[in-house]
Length: 490
Image (tube, rainbow, N blue to C red; front, side, top):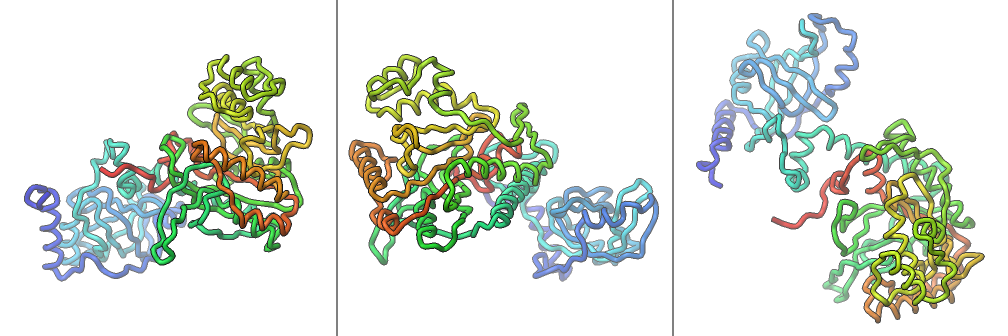
């Protein structure tokens, strides 16, 4: 659209020229501040209405309201709002001329004395006004804001300007990540970094993104999980406790709880099993909730949830039997398990093994009912290629997933440390891959070699940061908690 077709932009361009004609650079290099709005308000909370101070300050921010032809300006910075008073008693003629060329949305710096108006508004009497960025496009209309929800995600900068709730959600996310990191470091965990480009996609059952490295002339895969590299570090003795807060990428569909690029916390601790990971999961979630909410009682979607540890532990087969009346542990063959799943309305393709049939029944009949925090144990070994077999039932693995509000938020194992068993599990996965399962894990020869040098008994845990933030911010979509979610181009 040309300037002639966009009259609002044309008006602002004319004001831009007016500022330049006054000798004002509308895009200067810096503006050293002395204070933010919230700090000023806190410092002068006891200042009486109508009182003045002798304190000279320099504040900066975005204009969100202009009243009385520019005499009063509401200036917003990252911490809050401060009122600015622009009057000829304090501003020179050039300053007043510059104020007349300002628009809502412009970024300005103000120098002046602090007072509280007779109406009780903390105010800076402007003795100098500096234009810091003249805006050429108007902000969305104040009372309706960004009516197009998708536009909020496409132009997140506008969403953050207009919606305090969006700013608070992303700030709370930062606080959650900081709390998780701090808790682990205090427990003696070493934070590490592992590659995002893998020659073999492993560590999870997922379809990867593929890219190509020109100099090496090889295909590489964006990380679907950091697991195998993190355990290599434990093999090498870098530390007995390691963690990474990492970006992962999975070439899968989008939903309110799925984004192709997501963040997880993954950690490994030597000499413990998966029961230690249950306790750690409870600690981490409780720490995050306390840090940003000050409480272990949260409300999500109108539902009250108590995060206070300890959380119940229920086996997958036990939960499925309670929901369907079918004891999958009494079924010996894959065919029997598929038939049982089908008999209670679970869609099966006819190729599922015993463990996949049990998991399908759990996903269809149990998962979304797990509102209170619950550790689901007894995962089938068939679908857990990196976990040790259960000590009492070889069909199962020492693995749990933690569910809150019907979502998986954590996944943990007693890690498989036997290299021969690991190779056999990988080979079974490769057979499934050859049969058409694109998410089956390929054989990673170097990882098996690492195990042959010895991985100590080890517990491993992954927590989905995005879903945890959704729960702790009462956000209905994963797009609300990711600053720049993946969207189809317009």
